[in-house]
Image (tube, rainbow, N blue to C red):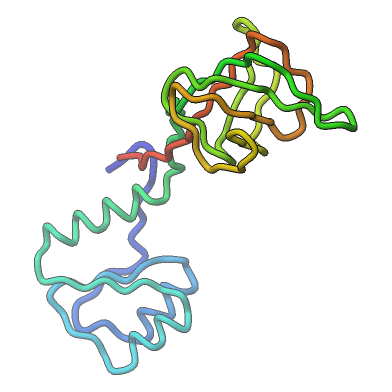
Length: 178
């Protein structure tokens, strides 16, 4: 039993798994689970054609674990933010056409190109997006570690000021449990 997901048994029967079992599961959007039974010829082909999962095992505890895992997969994953790095804006460089790059020093962790990032001025978040440009001297780089200087540009943002902070983070998907 679970408060988050309901389990509904469409049909229970004895005997081998048949094509009719697969057809019923296909119509109701269910999985077929066989405990200590064989399958009729052509069942796996029919299951693949209808997009039905067929599970079979001779150990009841493994079937129970399988059902729990399948129920947990129906839940939305929990998203957690993990801080990867932080850089401090030291100088602003113009690129022309109103575009700017933040000359920065990576203070902790690392900064990666295309990583999720937010620009902070004091405690206030001014922009969120991905790192569009990451340069070390004149070279495009994929990552800059703590203690090194680099040029950072967030996509769609061009109003940097000295003293701003750029935090990079990853979003982790954590599989929920029942």
